Amino acid sequence: MSGKTVNSAIMLLIIGNALALISDVFIKFLEEGAPVFQYAFMRCVITLLVLLPFWRQIDTSQPFAGARLHFIRGHVHLVGIICMVYALVALPLATANAVFYVAPILVMVLSVSFFGERLTRLSLAAVISGFAGIMVILRPVDFSWAALGALGSAAALAINAVLVRKLPRQQSTVHKLFLNYLMIIPLCLALAIWEGAAWSNAVFISAVGSSLFILAYNVCVLLAYKYVDANQVTSAEYTGLIWAVIIGWVFFAEVPDLWFLAGSAMIVLPLLMIGLQQRRVRLRATNHELGDTRYHASPAMAQAPVDNGSQNPEPRTS
Image 1 (cartoon, one colour):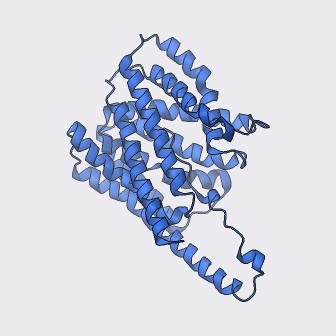
Image 2 (cartoon, one colour):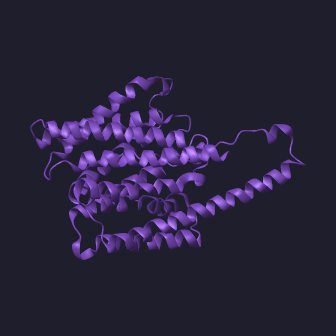
Image 3 (tube, one colour):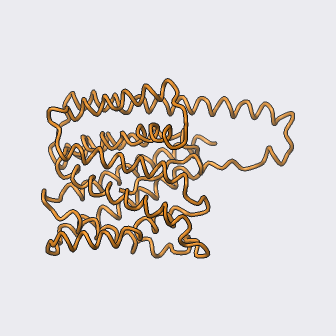
């Protein structure tokens, strides 16, 4: 893998995380008490309309393969969207995003429960440090519904990241996203009607902006991981926290305190260490394979392409 390709992937992730934060800004501009169910319904409809031009990437021979799991993931995603809105409207931008970064830690915990995976010492340390970091950032004395919303959004991201392993492998990302939003349209509509709020131009603008920018983020992530292994560039994903601090300071005059800095370090640094460890393991394995294939492997095996797709993280959709 050339250094140029890796650098390009890192740049795409940095740009993508900036776009994701702009998506969050569109939500944060909403006033407290804004009709959240109306927002969720608008966002679903807008996302489906944006995805329609890419309908050729949907497997029309089996359009509803894995429908039951898509239904579950979709409604978990809906809970995540609602929690995210409450968190972003009420919490400082950087604080909410720091809690969102707990999702990879929750994935480790859920993988033990769902797949019987074993945590390494470093992974266990990351879990303990991550949860302690949440307590430092949110400080239980100041706990609120917004803080619970941030945790709920992180939990939804983690659950869906685990469940995606069970989806049909042949389905494209567009196919998965389309079914994800299609499955929750009925409940979103019912909740919006029950909410009974009048049409809001502010909510519509927020839904359009957040939908377009989060989809642009997904494009950047997919392009970044198309030609490189996740463990080569995944550390660039954490630039989102830097963008959150910068954008929160520029647009909302939010200045992070020492509690935030300490808690964020407790969440992010162990995850970075895990990424570096995985990269070293992969490099050793690659060097070992090169040593073996140079003398023992057949030409067909030596030239076989490596499937990196299975190692790529599920892009954020909320």
